[in-house]
Image (cartoon, rainbow, N blue to C red; front, top):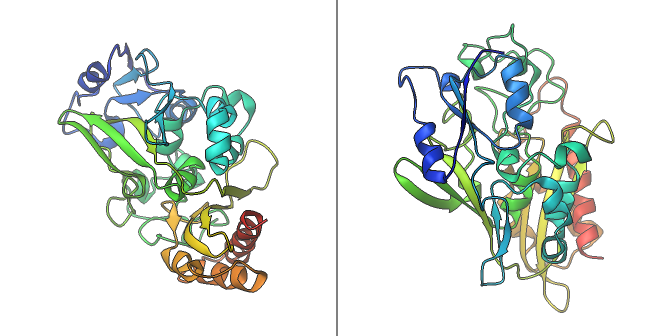
Length: 332
């Protein structure tokens, strides 16, 4: 781990000032960096993936660790809300059960007591070529993605090519399925956007996973009032605890009184370089009643366009099975 300056931010504006690049010409991974729970940043520091001259502690900012009603039937999540709070919050459980399930699926209770909503959305990929110090992969500024032709069991089947990492967040697919928006603060003020537009493909910028610029931080997530409390998050992982998704499905649907689908949102996790929404499968479901046949067809459509590599073709039938199970669960 390289040495760095430690700074406690008193306000969001203070954090933005402290995150101002000390050397504008320095590499993206050598700029000042924010820290919430620190669960991902600490491992990145230890592996020399990032070498910030300054780490800015956000937990000293008051008010960013709350879950509040928005006055319109939705919720506002501060970026510093810890995962265990999200998992246990009664209004989250009642209105957005899939979000509580997604939070519960993350790592261990100890990590969920420290890790934050903002940190989970902004964490770095877990591809071992990216995480190993001796591999200067394309994601770290090199000119090769070693997963191509290498050990790619856990890598992406959607959105790859230039780089083939998997986006590791469990909250992101579910929040996108719930039509959430994200608020960002930076040197130019605040901006809010759909969370689905927050993440970027490696073809757009292989060095970054999201739209955050130097000096910007996530401050809040807004979840609108849901037309129905029918949502779920199903995740397959190799180990029962402390593991990332090999595949996951976030689903939110609204059923008419006759159980016809009025609205559907499906987002895949563990399979893409960004949380992978499948609008063709969503459109297929609208106007239909869920059944084994309909669910199976939607699952097939959801995996259209997948481009597996040598060792991860299993992700196609695995994810199809999760889509079928999620839809069946929401129809119960």
